[in-house]
Image 1: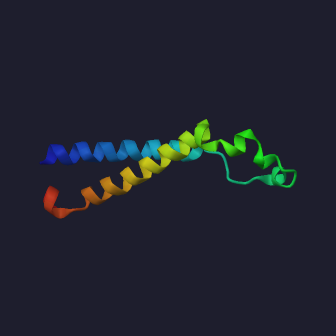
Image 2: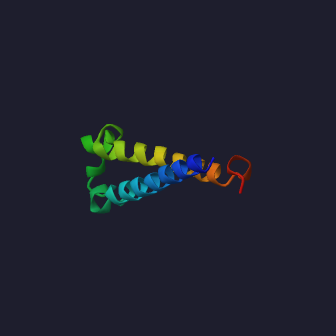
Length: 82
């Protein structure tokens, strides 16, 4: 059972590193002066879900959910006998 715990902890650490990297890669949510001139409604503003930024947001959401699930699994005493 110790080997499974070590594997889950390594997966948890990899998720933490990937999540940190992805959060740092994302742009800020500030629109700045572009919102005043209507630039926010451009092609890139309407298609954020299909752009690289949209992919980063989706992967970040997935990793955040995985982070929470693995953290809960690591803290269940029945599974690892802590």
